[in-house]
Length: 124
Image (cartoon, rainbow, N blue to C red):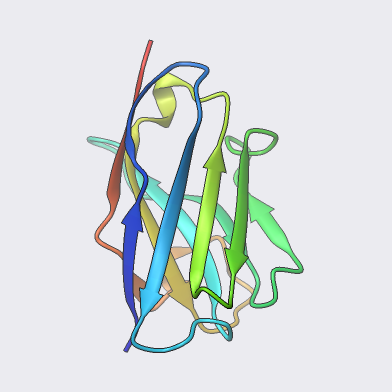
């Protein structure tokens, strides 16, 4: 079993930055793809970014491209999401996820493990 715990969320003004962390425990996640998803009030969960096992490839939703950067430190069993130029529409609960290698990194079904989420609120 893999347990995932997010941290780093908070309240920030538009244009600001936050760095989310996701610490994994229970087993190493070096052989798992990792991802970030978010869910805003009244909306469905949506894909934000993903990174392959070695970190060699990254994928982003159009809304995140150019502003967010996903990374991982397999030695620390941790993944990160650096979010810059934040907008009010980025307000959501952000979830990290881990899953076996899959070609469907942008879908929730590709991930078998989820964190409890961390709130990100961007004020205008």
